Amino acid sequence: MSILYGAPPSPFVRKVMLAHAFKSLPYQLKIVPPGSDDEGFKAASPLGKIPAYQTDKGTGFADSSVIIAYIEKTSTDVALYPSDAEDYAMALWYEEYSDTKMMEAFGALYFERVVGPKFFNHTTDDERVELAISKLIPTVLDYLESQITADEWLVADQFSSADVAVGAQLVGLIHADYQIDAQKWPKLSAYNERFISHELVQAQVQTELGMLNHS
Ligand SMILES: N[C@@H](CCC(=O)N[C@@H](CS)C(=O)NCC(=O)O)C(=O)O
Image (cartoon, rainbow, N blue to C red; front, side, top):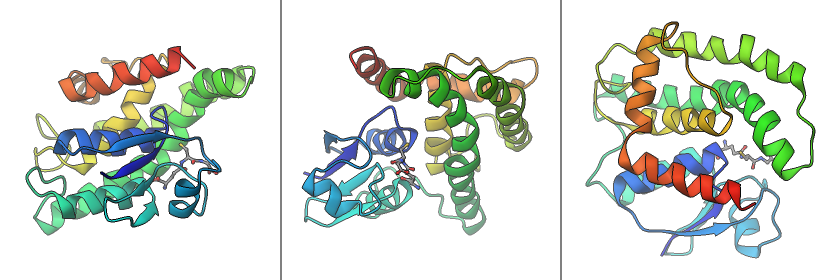
């Protein structure tokens, strides 16, 4: 069976776990932090970042986008990439936006409120929280609000890797105790509700809450 290395509170690990869940693909989760000395992890992730992956044939590599691209090739029953070229490009773009800009903005709040205090004995920096809430996060929410045109999903109204990536970041807001204001961002707020209430996402959230509460 394939091995996924990482820890679910990481949005990149969450993204990969959700992609497996939506595709109904089994895997073994091996919990490791970034920079772990685990030999299998080090071989798969020379940069020391999570997530990393070892396929059931023994090939090892890292990066959430690479892992999802790999599983898309091995399991085609539930396609996560749109077949149309324009839609495919947009799905890749939203994934890139999620991994960079959303990570920067949401990660700032998530670090200050959750990861820092829980894992690094770090006192919350209120100025950084204020910056995230007043500037970084609204910039992202404004952009996403402007992009949501369909009733359901981000690209061509078909569930795709874009939703997995953007949704994985939105889940982090639950842990960081941040509510999207439905008055300011009505389309995104409805999208968020749609994603979060999916039973597979709920299962992921419960797993993470269990892990965060026992760490
Ligand atoms: N582009 C990578 C980013 C992975 C990443 O930055 N993971 C963080 C944890 S959320 C990490 O391992 N950071 C440790 C480091 O940068 O050394 C992906 O999509 O998997």
